[in-house]
Length: 277
Image (cartoon, rainbow, N blue to C red; front, side, top):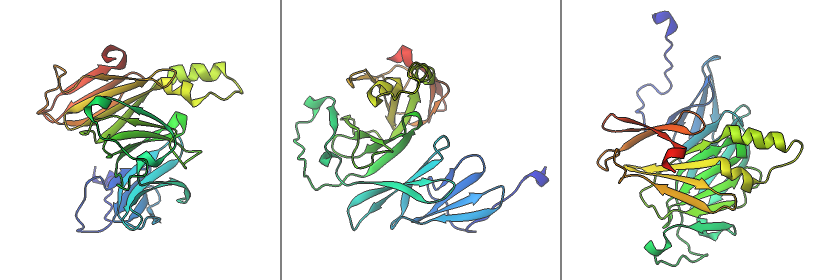
C-alpha cells in the first residue's frame, strides 16, 4: 500500500495556518505562504509561483469550469482589498477588483431590515471594508463577494466588468462570515435552449441563483425574483433542528435544490430549497 502513497514536503517544519492549502482542479494544489501562492502540479512534481500580491493572501477560490482562480489580500498602503483574477494554467492575472468602501459604487442597492439600523451611510465615507468570503457563480461568469461593512453586504461582480458591482445587497446580518450558492442548472439549460444565438439578460438568470449565507449558528437563504426583488427566508437559529449553541461547520451542495448542513455537535441536516422557501 505504501507504494501508492506520495508525501510532498514543501517547507519542512513550517506550521500550517488556517485555509492555506487548496485544490486547484484534480491534479494541482495551491499553498499560501504570506503573499505568495505556490501551485504544485502533483502529476509532474512541478512548483509554480503566483506572487502578484504585496501583502499576505487570506482568500483563494477556484473555478474549474472557468479555469480561473481568485486571491485576495488587504493593501495597507492603499487601505483597500485587492482581488486578483488569474488563469489557473498560465498563472497570469487577467483582471482585478479593488474594494475600499462598498458604498462608493454607483450600482443597484437593496437593503433589508432597514429599520434595525438607523445609521446613515455616506457615499464618500472613508472607512474601508474587509472581504469575508468570495464565491464563483460560474454559469453567470460572476463573483459574489461578502464584506464586513456596517450592513454586511453581498455584492455581485461580473467578470466582464470589474469596475463596479452589478448589484449590492445590504443584509443587516452582522454575524455572517461565509457564502455558498445553489444554482438551478436544469432551468438554466432550458432558458439557453429557448434563446439559441441570443444572449440572456443577467436579471433573468438571477432567478436560478440561490445564495446561502452563514456564520457560527446563523443560517440564511436568499432567492431572487425576476425584477431583482429579493426574498429572504430566515430559518436559523430559531429553526427547530439547529440550536444556536452548535456551530455550523460546513454547507455542501448535492444537486440543483438539495444541500446539507453539518454542525459542531456531529449532526447533518438535509435541506430542500423548495421546502424551506
